[in-house]
Amino acid sequence: MSTQQSIKNLLSTRFHTAMQAAGIPADCQPHIAPSKKAGFGDYQANGAMGAAKAIGKIPREVAQAIINNLELDDIAEKTEIAGPGFINIYLSQKWLAQQISNLRTKPDNAIKTETPQTIVIDYSAPNLAKEMHVGHLRSTIIGDALARILEYQGHTVIRQNHVGDWGTQFGMLLVELEKHLTDGEPADLALKDLEGFYQQSKKHFDESEDFANQARDYVVKLQSGDANMLKLWEAFKNISLRHSQEIYDKLNVTLTPDDVRGESAYNDDLSVLVEELKQQKLAVEDQGATVVFLEELADKDGNPSPVIIQKQGGGFLYATSDLAALRYRANTLKADRLMYFIDARQSLHMQQVYAIARKAQFVNNDISLEHHAFGTMMGSDGKPFKTRTGGTVKLADLLDEAIERAEKIVTEKNPNLDIIERNSISRKIGIGAVKYADLSKTRTNDYIFNWDTMLSFEGNTAPYLQYAYTRIQSIFRKAKLLPKELEGEIIIQHDDEKTLAIKLLQSSEVIEQVSKDAYPHLLCTYLYDLASLYMRFYESCPILKGDVSKVEKNSRLQLSDATATVMKMGLELLGIEVMERM
Ligand code: ARG
Image 1 (cartoon, rainbow, N blue to C red):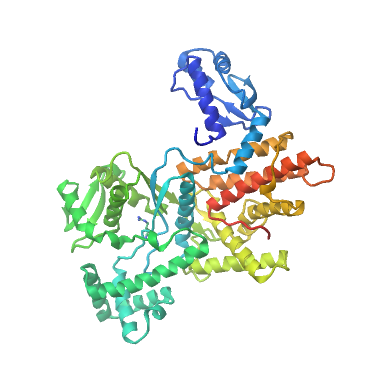
Image 2: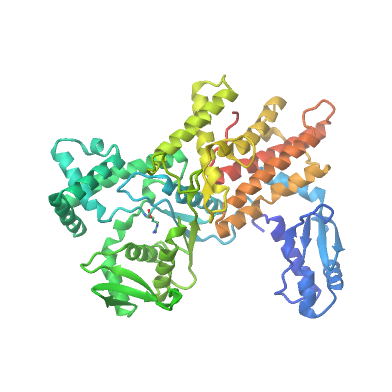
């Protein structure tokens, strides 16, 4: 086999074979899971009861028949039957040691997928009319974590930043921009404060009839391809994208300008698409607009859900460009899987888009269309996070504050750092804290943003995990050894060594789970548990103390290194950086 399997998959395969040899039908599952309580082995196979039911036999006898046919000597020390027919599995210490040694040399081995797919991930997607604000944080960092994880597994990941660059607001923005340019102000300067610029043009739009009329005229011109308008629009778009790119870089998010494919990119396909939907009789004229009525999404009174795809007067809508984007991703990018990271408040919109795409056969039936919704980031008052005066919080300001706050803490803890190192550590801690606080919460829930908890060095936080990593590095500095110099036997003796080893090997199971369901908090919980188990091991299994034998020291250092490797890999998959000291 080319790739190493996770414990769970390996046991599942072995049990499955044994079950078939015992005359159990192939569709009966072995149900392998880590044991939850001490004294019940390391793993359990819970499938005997179900199998017994299927073939009408006594569960404990079926369990015994499975064990009789089981080939597990290389992996397990012993198996035993418990209760009504659970099979407890005690993993062999020698086998575990070998696995840890493999993990140290090739940490990604068990993580590589055997069935690579092309996966398009839609995330971040701010509207370019304004500056990025906290509302864009969740999509940006959750989407990026998934992009990293799937890529690491060996999938082809195509990032698509579906920015809003084509709405009617562009009319007023272009009129405003043109005024600044004719006054001799360069575009860069005029758009330095994008948010202020937006407010200003909105004010002019609301107050002046002439301005408003000109704005409407400019939208029409822009959308029909007027060269002057396009030039102004390009200038605006480029500057706004530069703002976003600065945020991505600061956030350590992997999006680049090449990943941008905004709403405007689908302009040419919109009328074609509407025509096709009409021909298929899916779209109908309704009060001057073109509408698709979806029975499958009817409300409780049975009224079908209306989706407007073209307004009276000809304008296209958000749903229209999303449909065009979807079929581009499926047919041109040849995606097997489409993942959208968008606020839960857009759930109906996504359901409508997916339903129409399926009905119109814009995509084949095998393609997986997934909306991974998330809740809202709340302030301490339990309402959506705002500035003190109730305004939207710019993402740039929030990130600067995070770094500043981290710097205070870092300086307090370690006043002797030189300024370059202090800045670098503060950035990693501040940004890491903001990202981790978000990623570690169940995605679908709202959560309360709290500076003090996220920056704490205790509990399930980024600083705690980053610190756990640096602690292992400092053990190596004390030992005056580099991890790569370690070789020789790993011995798993103490209970805490065994628990740690098993946890380490479970990293691949967790990553597989996250890549399926897109819940990064599972990886966070895993890393937190791992760090805690390491601390326990560190307490009970001394490494550098005088009376520790050379062999033991060498073995424990290897376990430490394996822990550091997995911590670093896990944090980096979440987009969080580690450091050698702090
Ligand atoms: N620009 C939209 C917004 O800010 C998000 C776009 C999400 N992606 C999509 N394909 N609809 O609400």
